[in-house]
Length: 415
Ligand SMILES: Cc1ncc(COP(=O)(O)O)c(C=O)c1O
Image 1 (cartoon, rainbow, N blue to C red):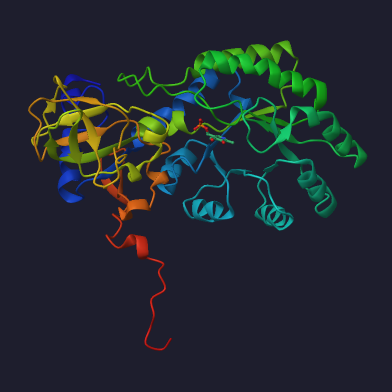
Image 2 (cartoon, rainbow, N blue to C red; image 1 turned 90 degrees about the vertical axis):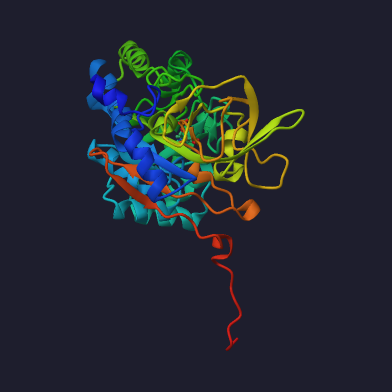
């Protein structure tokens, strides 16, 4: 980036440009989630480049989970670089197809017989989570491939447990069937080093029980460090991880034909999004000052729930960055409840902060807007995409103030 480009940014720690932020605040208002297409592609490409460097690009497929950011507009750019989507319910398939996505895997909870029938009709690989689900599939849909989730590393997700692997192998044998692929989720927010540690266990399961599989799906859980401000240091070390994968694959003589599937969400989406808020009042009081902003915990409940202290940048009304001062405050939302803070804990805020200033919460592209809660009757925030030409596009409208009651059945004169 040259100097003139970098001076256009609101801060060296964000991709957000001053002119864009001014435009979004003026035309759409706050609170608003803003996503950046260029950053999204960069995050996707970082993974593909790491795979290329490690020499396993041809064996790798990516299916980005839809539920951590359920805005289909984010899946179009990912589709353009060859990535598919991981889905959980059939409606996600319908909406993403409308947006051009054409590669899917389904990774759901336990399924009823009729739900299995529905997924077979949809026609994408679906990971089943129990022996009885597999038995139903084999009997009712004997030509369908068999994909199964193993819950062998104590993630406590629905899945066939480690102690059931022999029985499962026996079940397949009794129907003269082979497993096509298995998915194995290693946990959440795991470093490249720890992930590499799990590889050995995954390949032991592969070799011992199912050496005939065509694909191994490593699911998600790739760590993203919210504490870092620097835009590169936050990310999972894909280079290091793929080097370990390549080395393990060679050591276990895994044939070239076996594919490796990945379902990263946090690492792909987190720093693609910011939440822009307006400062409304600083309430000074003994104990804890309250910086009232026009958001609420319900706009992205998991930040507080998971104790995720996202970095926040502050700006005056001319969008000059305000450095944090000596004043500490909680970021107080609009609701009455004592726990309506949008972020956990205390923040150092600029000493001269005033109504009309702007707060930008970083790294809210994953597990944030998608979790909006209707509790407290506070409507959801709009979502905006900044495309690669720096054009601002509204992709989700601001919810109406009466949104909570949109499905209420109102009495009509005739009823
Ligand atoms: C099966 C599965 N795959 C992928 C993911 C995405 O994980 P992450 O956002 O940590 O990459 C999840 C998250 O819960 C998951 O359950």
